[in-house]
Length: 380
Image 1 (cartoon, rainbow, N blue to C red):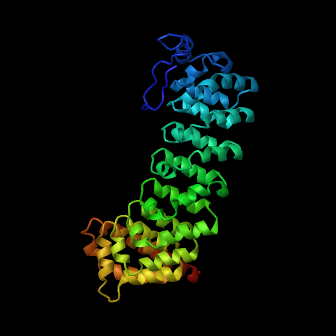
Image 2 (image 1 turned 90 degrees about the vertical axis):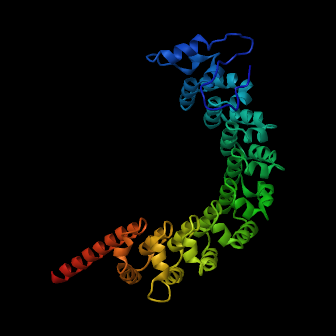
């Protein structure tokens, strides 16, 4: 049987069953696809499961049926897909049938199917459809099999992380395999955290480490590398996500280090495409005193409003000013609004200034409604 692996997402060619030279898909598959009125059952496709699995509609049919299949049906499907499992795993439609079997197969079948992966974990992890099967297996198989599978990646971690398919497998390992069994993965990242954080796939892997690795030493090592390069990472198209992740989910002291590191550069950072998102996160997740520090910097030391004025007209910084209005205390908001109102007419001339005008008018109207409501309740 030829391998239908790897290709694009187009509809599959005909599936040659071993020993048969039928150049057309079998009449059963044709009937299944053309006969919309007949409700097929799994046992009716006995002898054709592999062929159905490699067809868009046949694959979907098997997937749906496996969710509620009887033991007899599962046994029949398993006997047919097991010999061709590796080919199906790398097939555009077949991979879904294998994934479904990992979810709904019997424990013994799941174990046998996982055994079939051994010796092929790296190759499958780097393959477009195979990587999905590996991820599913890592989610559902028993721990002893997870450990065996993951061990096959030893020595190839960085290659996987930098690969568009393999990075998903590494993320899944970090999510689903207990930390003590993936130490060799984590230690590969030491002294590479900043490099990985600025990589399109590496930045996702580092975020998974921050979420799932609770070992104090690991946390400290990874965090120290990030915190040592905060300004650079904040301005990087991928690194900014890692810094945002720490601001959102990190410990208060880690958040504080980031905010104090960026303080003094807030105006420039707010005018930068990626760092402006980081500044918004600082305002959202910082405590009151940290927020005050940033707001003071944005307002500037004189009444000339220089930083604020420049920021309101800027394509990225205007969002930071909006975030300030959203997150600051009522008292600060009144103060900032009074500083902004002076410039409202001038701002209307600027594309990005208009965003601020709209936000301010909304806030002013809300404030007036609040005052009116309070005075009417007092009058009552």
